[in-house]
Length: 66
Image 1 (cartoon, rainbow, N blue to C red):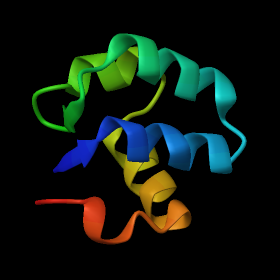
Image 2: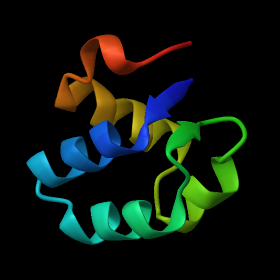
Image 3: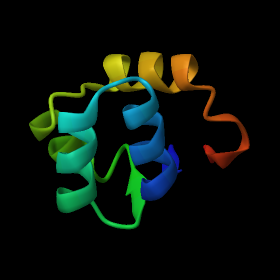
C-alpha cells in the first residue's frame, strides 16, 4: 500500500499521535510504501495491523493506493 507522507503525518496528528508523526516526518520519504518501508514503520512502533487500524480510524480515503 502506498501513502503520501504528508497525509499520513496529518492523520497521525489528528489522532493525537504527535510523537510518531514527528518521527515519520523526519525518517520517511515523501511516499510511504508499506511493503518497502516496513522496517522504518516498525521502528516508529507501527506494525502493519496497527497501521491499518490507524488508517481506518483516520479516514484516509482516496489517498491510499494498493
